[in-house]
Amino acid sequence: MPDLLPVLHDARELALGRGLAVLATWALANLLVSGYLLPRTDRRLPAFYFHGMNAVWGSINAGLAAWGVLHLQRHAPAGLTLATALTEQFGLEKTFLFNAGLDVAYVLAGFWLVARAAVPGAAQPQRLLGFGQALWVQGGFLLAFDGLMWAVLRSYTAALLGLLP
Image (cartoon, rainbow, N blue to C red):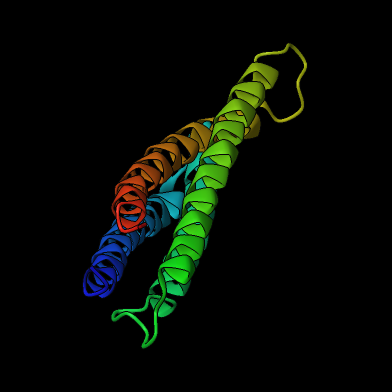
């Protein structure tokens, strides 16, 4: 079964690369759409702040996707052991699970901002509303993305654990 270890490694890296392509596409879509609409939107409207926040998230997500792609190992390193593969695998799973927790926090922060915008006399309610709505969109997408990536990675963990004697 040692021949299966490099195959699983390469398959996992391919799945990660595809996931990062999805993240990069999301980032590019945010940069293009919100980057186009931001200067064409009245600053007094929540949409201006919504597009501004989406453009910032697009930049961050593009950077994360690029960093991830640069760190992909397209082929299993020589001398890869099951212990090393499992350690890397558990680390990746924890990263996506932790990120999913952050995503929940982003969505909840969006609810807080939208609720804050509805308070009579709130300072800059349009900004609060636009930022809150952007956090819903970004946090919601990232929660689905991180959850799906975690689930995909779990299948590789099960396969690696199946290699244990």
